[in-house]
Structures are given as C-alpha cells and as structure tokens.
Length: 560
Image (cartoon, rainbow, N blue to C red; front, side):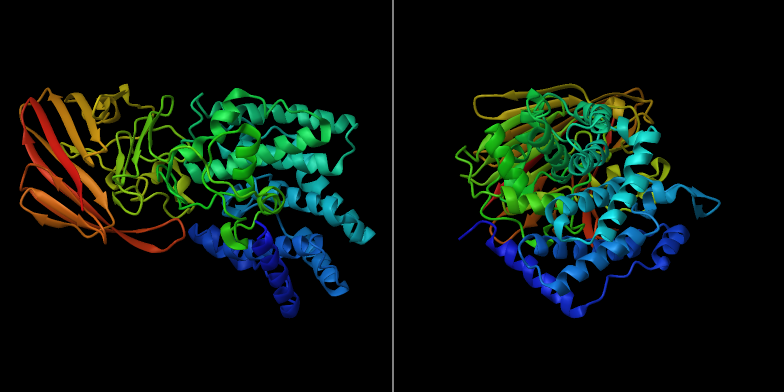
C-alpha cells in the first residue's frame, strides 16, 4: 500500500464533507474580545484553526485532482474569506494599547500570519491556473500588504530570536517569495539575503550537539520550516548552503536520540505529545543519512491541530516508509544542552536527565530534573506544557503555573525555597560511562539564588540499565546549622506509601522509590494541560532535617 494512500483518501473525503455542508468556518469577533477580556486563547484559536483546516483540505483536494466546479468555487470562497480577515495573526501575538488591539494589527507578521501567506502563495503555485483572475489578484495583493511589504519596511524582533519563531516566520516568507517572485528578480534576491539574519539566529539557538531545548515538538515545527525553506531554496535557486551546514545534520538526528518508543519522546520543556511530520522525518533520513524515528505511512490529516499547509503537502510529497537499522538501545549525551539519555530494550528501561540553564526558550524551572520508566510507562515523569494563555508567556507570571514551576519537577525544596528563574545554570556537569553503569553529576547551588546559606548542592545520578535502577545522591553544604530539605518527585500514577518506600504500579511493571525516611507526604495537584484539559499529578515529598553538611541517598528500582 502507498505510504500516502490513507492521507489522500482522508483529504478527498473531508473535502466532500465540507462541500456538502457548504459553510465557511466562521471567525467571530467574540474570540478577539474574549482574549482582550480574559487572556483566553482557545476560543479564538479553535475557530481560526477550523478555518485553516477547511482551506488546507479543500486546496489539497483540488491539487489531488478533485476539480469539480462546485469544489473549485468553494475553495475560492474560502480563500476570499481568509483574505477578508481582520488580521492573519493570532490575538495573543498582537500589541494591545488601552485594552484594544493596535492599529497595525492587520500587518503584524507572527507565526500564523506568515504561515497563511505561505499557504496562499503555495496554493497559487499548485492550482493557480484554475483560480479566477480576480482571486489571484486578491491573493497577491493581500500577501503584499500583510507580509512582503511589512517585512521589507520594518525590522522585526523575531529576526533575532534563537527559537522556532525565526525559522518558521523567515521560512514562510522565503517560501512565499520563492513561490510568487521570478527567480531572477532583484527583489527576491534581497529578501533571501535579508532572511539570512533570522536563519542564522535560529541555528544559534542550537549547540553543535543538535539538541532542541524547546522540546521535540518545537523541533518538528521550527526545524520543519527551516528545512521546507532550505529545500525550496535549493530547488528554485540552486542554493543548498543551509542544507550543507554540519550543525543542521546534527539537528536532523535529534528526534531519534530522544525517542522513547515509536511516537513518545523525552518530555522536557514545553512538550505536548507530538506526532512529527512524516515528510520531514523521511527527508532528514534521505538527505542527511541520519537515523530517524520509524515511518510507516504519512501522518493522518489531523496530526497537526493547526492544519499547517506546508507540512501536510510535504507529507504527501516526501513520506517514505523507513525503519532505522540502528540499535534502539543506547546511551547518548548532548554535551551543549547537557541532556543524558540511557535506553535499554532488554530489559526495558528508560532514563533521561538534564542540566542546562533557566534562560532557555520555553523554559521550565527544571535544571537537574529527570525522568524514569520504560518504553510504555514513565513512572517519574515530566508533565510538559501547560495551557498557553496570555500570562503563561509573561515572565513575572510564567512560573506560577504548575507545569512550568520547579514544583512539577523532581527537584528539592531547600529551606522553603524552590529553584529560581533567571540567568542561572548547572555547573561542572559531567556524564561518564563506567563499566557497569552511567553517572551524571552537576552542581546546582547557583540555581537556588534565594538560598544565600547554601554553599553547595551537588546532584549525582548513578544509572544501571541492566538492573533497571537509579541511585540519586544529593549532597548539601550550608552556612546555617539547622536546615530542611524536601525532596520532591512528580508522577501521574497514584502513589502508595509504605514507610520509607513509595510504590508506583503500572500494568506490567512497578517502580519502588526508597527515600530513606518515613516523613513522606503526597500532594495531589490539578493543572491545565496544553490543550486546556484539567489533569492530575501527584507530588511525592520526603522531608529531611539536616545540619551544616548532608548527603541524601534515594534509590529507584523498576521491578517486574
């Protein structure tokens, strides 16, 4: 069976469903107003992405040969309504002045405005010959007004961002220009040259190890658009320089290194269980000859709740079935990001820990944090991204949310203080492969900037994947003679406490944590996940009264 047959059938069927309903997805003003009043993003964004789904599905159906007059007219009406939108940007990315959106909102180039421009430009390339002259004029006019001219006129802060913003927006603008402007035009050359700033900024956010500290979902997003643009630049202008940068090959291999089991990945930072684009994975495996997560067929239509046109089209064009021949059991250390991965299939075991800093993009207070389990269950986990609201991205408010706070990570509370945000980082981080185990050590006292009495906090992980065990050793030095340390662990499995031991039970295995003290409590926490759903996690907290120097040893064992 073709790797894209299912996706093609889904697209064609959904296009027929839309045509039967014959209604353009509305984009009500109440969504804008709700954001201004409460900061809620979900109401507007659900409506926005419903319309983008229609646009993508119907345009791809026409591209795939479903060219009835009714479907053609419906596509043109959808495009017309998109061109009528107040702004292509999301409310969360607009400037607000006196409780109203600023006057330049229609010309704001955020992630989604750039994606919309790229979508319409690529639709012009694919099916432009079947569109009416009026509609083609409208598309080109709106892209000029909302994307190309504002980009050329102003300097944008995203051009210097070392995260997904620079790659996505610059990649979309580049693909838009490559789709609409003649290859020999001076204007195109100037745009391509200008985009080098943003692309260089994006790559600067990576070390030579290729780790994406924003999380693997943002790898699929930011690196995806980097590759889509780089490939189109090479194809249209013969310019392959982005694809030939050595660091880019290292970045391409990142998902394989953090793969837990098929579609599950290390959930650090603002992680929400991603399904990475099959076309992107296939391209990376083919072009860079790096190991990749397995690909069996193209993603389903609904794999991306934003229904972005570029990855869906390339899923159709690029997806090839492939299963990496490399061993899925390994240890790997990302030296720049300070992430250690230890993975075993027989016996099943998975461990990952991180150092890093608290100034990372999509940062959580998680230096010294870790996860532990097997390929089916993470007993000690990371709950990933919280719901994206207005305040979630306000520095003064961000760490009041449970998912981003130190409280949702396996980090101690020292004399009532948790790990602090800001320009703090792990010190003296070292990953060593010993004859029968792996060790990761780091010093974390700098990350507890409120604890002036703390002179040393050294954390050591001793990992034995054959015995499926981890020994966690925390060493503290204080300037005060009486101190209190609460070792904090987080799980989504209801814990059972028995003396100094805590049991976490799954269907096929269990995890036993021995904290060495009976002063153990469990705190149930409710929080909103990335999709706005209420979830429950459990904080396991072990209390220790310590003096000037202390060493706390905790053992964690997986058992059948």
